[in-house]
Length: 599
Image (tube, rainbow, N blue to C red; front, side, top):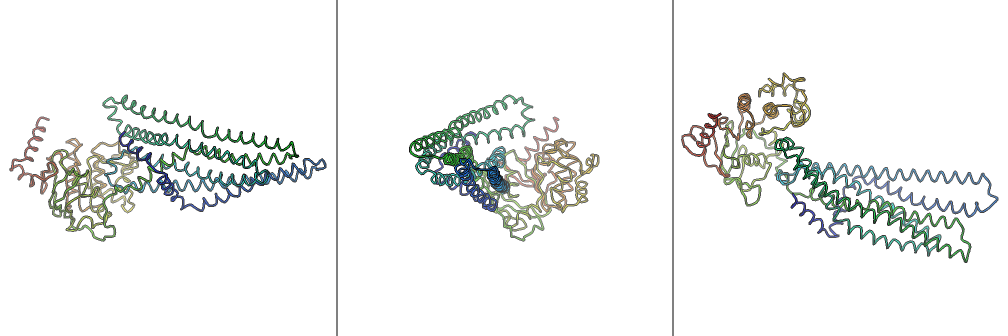
């Protein structure tokens, strides 16, 4: 995983300015769907800038024309106070509307990005998940998308700062041209600070995102394998590894805090203080020649404050720019990932009616140049049961993976009912092919939901019939709530055999034409296996069945047994025919029979 992190960091470091601008352009394309909210916010930013110019002018006029006039009455003071109060309330409302609509736009954009990335993940082929840690994927959907919210907020403050600085500068020019130009010179110094900050923080932020992704990956790995960790006493090692990543993240975060503390808000405060010193000095020098009214000084310093204050917000959010660029790069890389699931003819109306299966000289490799299936050919007639046997890694599960279109095969052809498998829609394949895997996964909820699998067309009566059909009804009827009995995460409260029977019911309730059993009894004790075998036998009736068997005793009645070795079919025939040949199958059978006798 460390090599992958280095590769990712190297790619990010190598991004040119043009590529970074491309990333920003693509990220902002998500915001176009909510331009109404952002548009209203920008309009109120403009309105706020106008109010910020008018308020100091009002006070300046009042100070210079009324407060200096000893004849000003209480009525005039109260009227002005009321007008100023109304303007201040209007300013507060404007700020609220501006922030509210921008926040709503940013939240909805975040929601869209998160939904789109979640949908994209479900279009990816299994090859992507083989290479990418689950924790890293979780980090993309949660941390990286959340980072974009702060990233977009930075641009709100940039817009606010742009309007405020322009309006404040124009107002300062109207008061004193030379001091306004002197104030503008400080922007050049700030530009250098921003350049220096980005240069120093860029690599640190890239490392921070990667370390955070590693922490999520390590946490996910620990939670998923907690029983194995405890069984083999690996708690200390896992804790040390987690602390190593967490410590690295802390050190990087500490560096970032130091840079932020040095170059962000303190720098703005220093520039503002120096600008005030220059301005007061200028007014002081001017006052030696002419009378400088107090209202003029107040208005200019207020405009100067309005000139620098938005920059403080920008500088405080500037740290999110690097964070957002890294998150954006990673999200866009995921959006652009081409490791999609194999493509089908989704507009096809072809249906699977018989269940005939044929492989013609099929070759398949998970990695280019390393084939796991080599020139595989066989035919399964409708209603037949064909079993695949062989040592671990011989290619048994790979045949199922490409037939279910989890992976794209290379050479050869796969036919269903004499039609190319690619000519069927994905929905038709999923509807007519039922899969039972070695380790069934149950979702949090109840038994009925796990059998129905969110298909509301399946009735409670059909669920119960499926349970009875596979002999799962025997234990379900003894549970509190029966088919509505609670299922904990991954079905941890049920035995392996019970989870397998529920998965049988989940498959059979859809009445598939082709049944695929991937070592469905491999992790089950012999006594439970007898009960499950009954359910399996019923399921195979009138269905084309592909069975991968670890225990040869479960496939002796198969119409044909294919023996795989290093991705090639080396023997085929019935149980009796293969035993008579005295080949590889006979050796496997003799070995398993000997183990059974020892037990």
